[in-house]
Length: 426
Image (cartoon, rainbow, N blue to C red; front, side):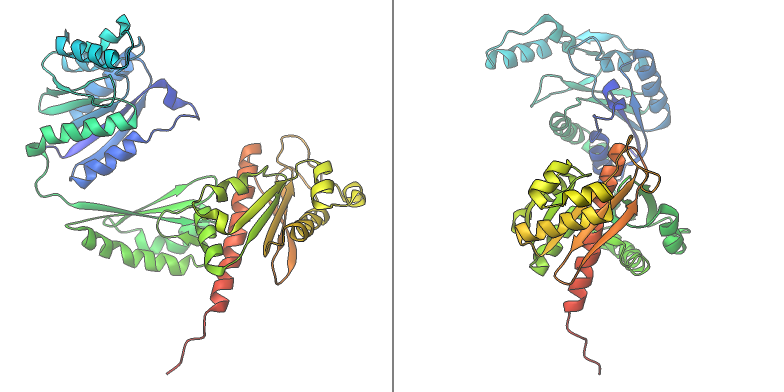
């Protein structure tokens, strides 16, 4: 019976900043739903020796090792050979795989190149897992009481094949499974240590639910994981923590269900019946991009003017040349004129502007790199806030985007609270 598992993500591309692994997240959730605990995950380059070592080590430590990727037709696809070495088997040619590959290429009106035949070799004694949506078949090997499963890298192919594998070993899955429920809370405007100081007393001695904190450049995530006989029972374990965290993090906790700050702000704007417009300089349109990624944003978001140069600030927002010369583009005065010009031109009920130094060049002794001025105009008043942000150029721009969204969140939250009718006393 499978009780523990390890996931091996294969591919040198996963060491670059542009490639993200989502397969292991999917597999972990699906395995834990079935009572199989994932103990570790490895990301391994397309290196035969290292991949062999990781698979062999995994088979000696857990009941089930699952790899994703490395099953294609090219020379750097090494999963088949690594698995064969790890279990002490030879690669064996499978004629049915070649026939199926040729049929697939024929249906597409293409001629199959010779290197695709690499996919027809699997470790001897393994069960073949058919790929209904791609070309690379997977396989399932047993070795000294443990199992190794090789799945393709494309998520759609991987998920379909994983379901096929689960069906084939249904009798070996845990029969008395515990449901695993995760809740992700999101916090902004606090540092990690300050947040933990506020809430650690509620979770430091707990094992079920388990609480972990994840720091990102934009916000903080609180992951609460509970195991129980049913989803309802797990939720009952989680809810007291959510209630306690909500009270201790009042004003900073913006989502209790893993929603982005942009999603929350769009919903708040809709609830308040307010419209929003932006004038972005240092963020270069990132705030607008975040909002437009949310379905239904057009109901509340009128648009954004990306006025990156002084010329655009003058022409599109009416910023005075005299202000730019006397105070510079990165100043409280320019942020103010930007937001006032935006309000005049759009008629939006809420307007935000931003101007700042993202670096690495620019900045002054008075306003170093990381200085951002945010103009904020509401029906009640117009103000400018100065914020100082650490990090690289892209981090400063990203953090400025989050800061503007958080400013909106706090304002709209107070606005909604002020509109609530007073409670009746007994």
